[in-house]
Length: 140
Image (cartoon, rainbow, N blue to C red; front, side, top):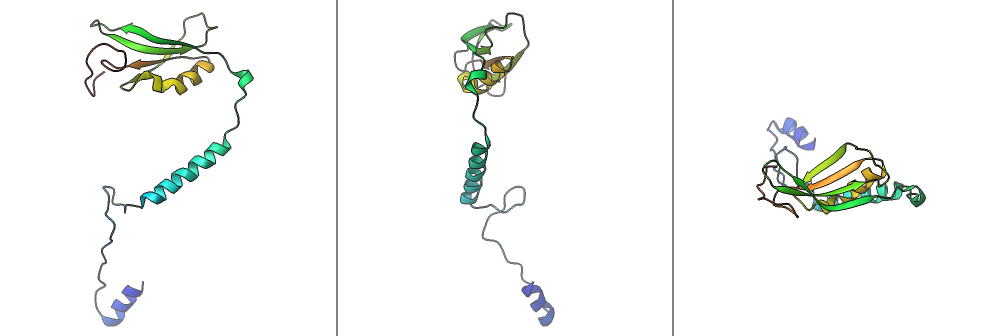
């Protein structure tokens, strides 16, 4: 504002100042990583306090089947970890997650869905975890 008023009085063009911070691909100025870290901590702390404690008496027991092999058409066997309610005896649809990481990382989701009446299967891709075959990034 002051620079443009001075330019009008003196009859000169204002000089554009270059920022010291780099501009990212979206045209936004890079912010300090400390600001991002502070926001992340503040949001995480507020959500951690907002959660109500879980009532352990209402939890449904979960049956976990480790390293269940699933045969593919070409003979490769994929390793799956299956989470389910042990009281369920009838066939149910399955929520399935294929992951290039170890299927044990999906334990939180598996427990959640199994306690809410679903069957959840976390499956290792070919060549990952205990699955047979060769891992090729980007291919199932």
